[in-house]
Picture 1 (cartoon, one colour):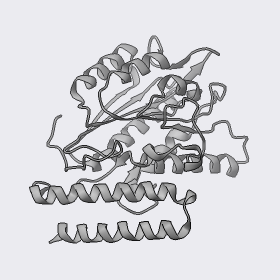
Picture 2 (cartoon, helix red, strand yellow; picture 1 turned 180 degrees about the vertical axis):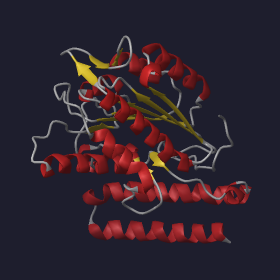
Picture 3 (cartoon, helix red, strand yellow; picture 1 turned 120 degrees about the vertical axis):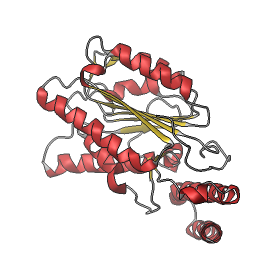
Picture 4 (cartoon, one colour; picture 1 turned 120 degrees about the horizontal axis):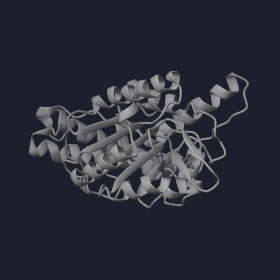
Length: 312
């Protein structure tokens, strides 16, 4: 259902949403193999839908699950989305279920013929959104990363390679990360892809440690198009900056404020400042402490003044 866009965003840098940009989320829950997994995957998909509703009317959520999540249905859905999405919009694809790797090709398990990573990549490549995120939470998902990675796209996989073939638990914690702003570490009321990744990766590692089990999955992130991904995104490896500015959960501003042209400019300025603060926090480890504090203080002061004008 097409609804009124949420709020204005600043047209600065490639990190920031465009003015009146919409967000599109597509979740595909594939084959479960057993009734237990079938129910679990569908439940996770429903939880994602519920969590994303907080984003407001500019957030378009579509889900395929169970018997309806066939290869042809996925093709048709992503082809349709490609005709609706604008370059300034944001697009996220979430894969839940099982994946396989035969030493050459990764495949996402769906009813009927499976979908290869190359086929998924070709479909997502046609979507014109300049801000894209693909989250593959399946087993063997690490093998899909080279095909899915592209400059301008954030790619997250639950495993580091195709040889990690056990059923994954990363999806559980990824969903937990966005529910009730659980992963909102900086308490700004939003959850970025980087925050969600770090939360889910940490919780997954803790699970294996607490259960005294050998870890059978190691999540990876690539947002530079490098095609290999890293487990710990940071300025040192140049990974994570785009993910830090890609919002998964960002509740809309008050409708009355968002409809005021002057307030829209202020909201756009606020978005710009918040993104600058996020980028600065990302670079903190590589900066002299005094310089970091100086820049942060300047940005926070400017943000406070902007917020005060919005509240008038």
